[in-house]
Length: 347
Image (tube, rainbow, N blue to C red; front, side, top):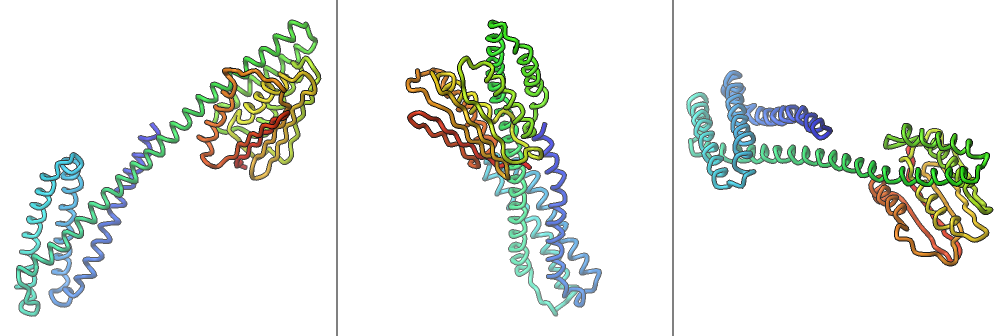
């Protein structure tokens, strides 16, 4: 539907392009024939100009709308060039006979123009105008195809982003339900609070984050609630902190862009640490968004077949949303993971 709208918009602009082109051709021809006003009079000047431009427009219309689609684009080159040659010959005969009449009889011997000279002149100029119209035709078609291709790429981009988001949401929901299940098993008094937070998170996830961009402030609030749920779930002491510098009220960000990094830190850091678990998140907001995440790395970490899926999806989203315009740096040290994410903000 979007591609059709783009093409309709381009088609609506094409008549203006053609009008501008033929207006320019007419002005050039009028300037080239201004001497006829004095030599042959104003009526002959306008008649000569009208005959020339009308014949050229007819020749161009037949070439663009009949010969190119039916012959040239179908690679029937012999038929195309043969018919173009016949069109040019027909045009030359009509125009040269009129020129011969105008210059030979109306202007008389003051011009002394022969039919052969008129044929050569008309052939040269007709070939030039014909090449210009062909170039105009292919230029417009190329521009239309480029616009349609870009629109298709944007549609594909949004479809892939929606697919990747759909992979993130169930993963988070599964983790949150696990948190609640663990609390209900312990009959914790915190269970109602968790249900409320989970309800707020689900409302944001289902109703407030369905667009390509969301408020950065709401996204950070969503992330804060997520951390609170994770703090409740932890069975051992953990230093979990998030600091935010800068104003997020007027900025927007694609939804769920930071969450995979935090989830990964819990899954492969705090969740597997025997003691001294920590997760430090610092968010710096200016014209760019800078997210720094640091968490401990366990000494012995078992290989997980699903390890890296969240990060892989995140990288795909970043490539689609910020092609070659983002920084995702993951540093692995003997006892520590550090992640740095930088993207431009819409503020």
